[in-house]
Length: 298
Image (cartoon, rainbow, N blue to C red; front, side):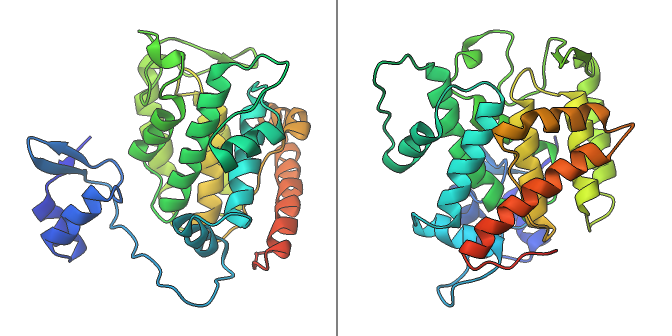
């Protein structure tokens, strides 16, 4: 990955070097790292968006999510997204935490369990997923990049039992071959090239349709670039890209996961299965948006 220094970033974004340093220290520049007392910034990172000033309550989904997140507000659409997206995406992948337990962790930062045994990884990955949702909201307007996708994986899998395995690469591409649904995926030695090509092709056109986003998701899952966590990362990316392109976002719910899996498996031959599933999920999300007086695209 190529990096630029503070001075280069300031010139590129037409702001002061002091502002660049402040953005770095506040964690608002994706992938920025401190090396030998100086900030190194990924060359493909875009200028951070300015924070919205207080004012009229926005009816745009992304602006509302950002406002409620920054204000630490409970009971709004941000609160709803955190719980629903985290519970459903984790449950699809086998988490045994209930919806109520997920909500309790989010709202109290504690876990209360009676007469049951809970996998610690389920708790850790639930908390980590909340942080991933924040990353998606904070960087929704940025073009999709490898650094962002890897950062999502790093946050999701940090502190899990997988992260203590010497062969498991947290925040980096897989080292061992894996399968999904009994199907072969891209070989580890080919993943980096395949991901670069996938992202390059996807970013060629600035305006995306729901079909483009679904197509990317299918190809991402077919590559299966990480040792574990690919499904959750892929669904977070879809949510982000809907926000970036003004498309009504959606949450794949656990009780329709079989339709979702069928859609992925049959995408090359019949795109209608997966698209119909996602349009159904969009309609469900529109009900949330209606409740919170948010506008959405048809």
